[in-house]
Length: 290
Length: 258
Image 1 (cartoon, rainbow over the protein chains, first blue to last red):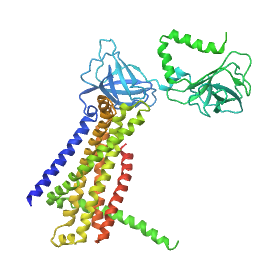
Image 2 (cartoon, rainbow over the protein chains, first blue to last red):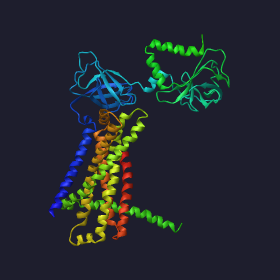
Image 3 (cartoon, rainbow over the protein chains, first blue to last red):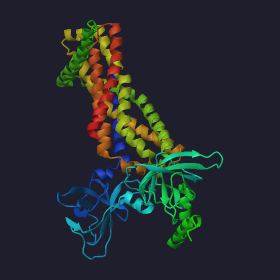
Image 4 (cartoon, rainbow over the protein chains, first blue to last red):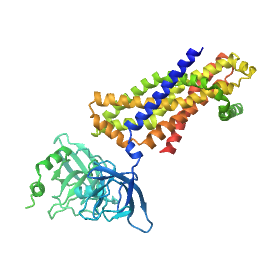
């Protein structure tokens, strides 16, 4: 009678050992144990005007190597800047006083972290000291806005007039997409359909009546807002004294860019002067302003 | 309308009475823990039965869950060029949700039913009454050891399940689909947190599910009508009630722990 009992005990013991072994495996091999136990560290204060999506416990890095984590993020009422306390490993106690703390994003869509770029001062930051020089995050929207000049508040579209434009490729432009001039919405796409004879895409744009002084040699282009945003039609004003009227057709159009094309152009036009030339050439050749 | 009204009332009050009786039964079980310390061997025997004997099914299911998750995620994430994150997503979804829930559902099917059927048959064949005649407390000797065994076995089984799922994800992702081995592990270790994912996710959730499943199983066994039909009905009820309780409790726990 004792024989089967002891075999139960052995099997159960094995089961418990296996379970704890699995737990130890999960905890040590597949998770960040480094985040859990902390070695001796000291606190450094910093202030940022914009912390973006920085969270507590986000890593602090020097030269890309993790040296600590964000201890706390607080906003004192009445102040415009966020107080961020960094907890840095005691081993890295030779950080110059004029080092710059910057909020970086790992990758395009990754988490944010605080990067410390060394300065050249002889004095080092003491414990509970302060890193005075900081660089805040720049919201992705602002950065992209600088690139694309897109974004803006949708105006209340009152009465509108329609204008036709032919594109060889509209990308994923859909009905209802905004029409923008100088980045501001001035209308919307009324319809997109393929022309069976010309074999291109005919897009009908509804433009607010208030914007009735658009030169008739203006160009229409299909742009993308942001990297993975929706597509819209941008109108680049021309120089003609005659204005677009209801039912007119815009002759000068620029089709949707494929990301691959864009990158290809980027790689070819390395220097900034080249880029400028290409930009002038693009607008000058079809528009024929000169 | 007049005919139906009392009937509906009956169903509502019946299920309320069930829940109430189940809660009272839990108190009885917990009160019997000091008395059942005499029957440690019985607890170990039950642990062997509900835990060690369930290992095979848990391991096989964990392996396949990890493999199929990785396969699905790989194809979705390849649209965005983010396949290197798939190992991390497998680990997080298994630790936080799938591990505890699937283990608990399997545990209810594998161990819960047999507990109910065993206790129900003990009742039907008057063994429980015989124990009382011999001055053996059936709660301390039959119910509490099974409850404790389920409570201990579930977190351990869940850990095994999660480890097997990660192994399955590695098998498909790295060996078959060609994700880089170093990226697979470094992404995972960067995002999985010991406290929020492993302690709160794996351990706490599975402990709660283990308590609920074994409580329902033991309760159904003890309250079954002592007939063969009653035992069959009680066994079914164990699976149905446990499954609903697990999924509902999972929602509540996730809302609180997140």
